[in-house]
Image (cartoon, rainbow, N blue to C red; front, side):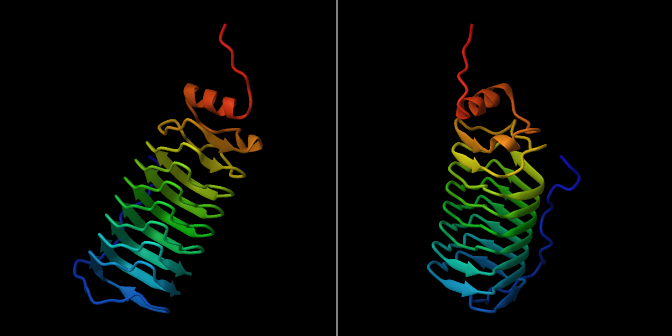
Length: 211
């Protein structure tokens, strides 16, 4: 792997469990466990040097959210909206992110590991040194993504949309998909295996015949 591969957050050894999600709050050094913040709307929330474990935020809306050195583990963030958020040194491990919307967010030194992200949106995001490992990303949106050092390792990508995203040097070879959307003018330099090349060609309308 590239030496810039994401590293674990620098979280403290001792925590406070006394915190609330509210507008303009700045939360640091907390360990939230088993909490439910579903259906909330919160603006300008900042979360630093913390762990959230088995926390539920279904259909929650976090406007201008900022996370720095945060570890999310076994959380349910289904249909959560953090459009325009900022994430630095953040790890999502074994989290449910189905339908989650990261559109127009900035992610740097972040890792998604063993996560369910089907129907998730990363459209118009800025990804720098971000890794997706062993994730389900079927029907996900990566439309107009700007990226540098993007790692895709052993993910499910069927029906994902990569239109108007540059693909040069992006490595898809360990990932799986039966259908995928790319812009034809961005395909040059994409790394795929033989089967993936056939799937992409068929999606572009080529008729492949064996003699």
